[in-house]
Length: 292
Image (cartoon, rainbow, N blue to C red; front, top):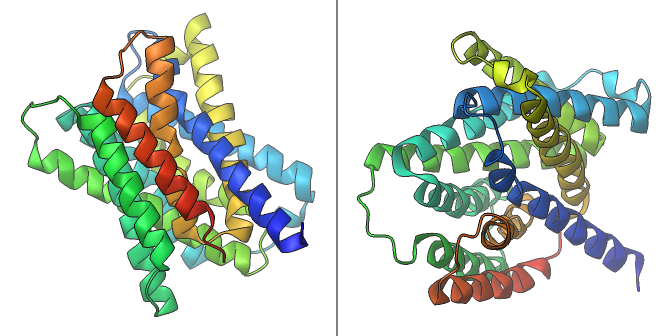
């Protein structure tokens, strides 16, 4: 296999691994103490996750990660991280987990494609458009099939803003990595900034749940695994794949969440849901062949 093909395959495996880790979040949160709310969970997750990424960056680069950053783009990436986290939780609060997640995950690849097209001044590849469309349709079918509850328009706005934040920090990360920055250090800088921006939420939303034995395990897992490890893999993927491709491949996340929900929490998957899973997988296969 040519070196470029090996790098492409490794990067694809990295982002799919990250997506699987992202997909475990909901199942883990089921075991969180009752005092854990969306705002405190999000802030604690980012603080622990940013610390994990800093440790990983130090292990990879020694002091190299302290090289002066392009502060404007790093700040923009940090805003994207904080906006994604906060707007997603607000969307879920107003629309419920299913609608909020589907709207966020569905809008993220679209926002990334638009940003990529504007920055590169060329349309996205046809294969990416087809794969993303098929995958988004599958996610919608998986998350919304059989649900007829009213949808809060403001909640959808928050979800779209969350998807935009996701696209922004992924695009900034790709830009800095292509400019020679270490991928893990790039993620650490953006998530560290995002953690600082959301830290004031802990003044009004107590993180005391994280000091309980069960809560500490949940907090460490969410921070170290679903941020530290997952976004290290995410950064590796951004080294060799376009940002829109990385974001679309992350659509494996809802499949992981649905399957874990069925196996661990005993939430059934309807026939339409299995069709949705099949569509997502078809879309991911198409998208995975899009090269840099």
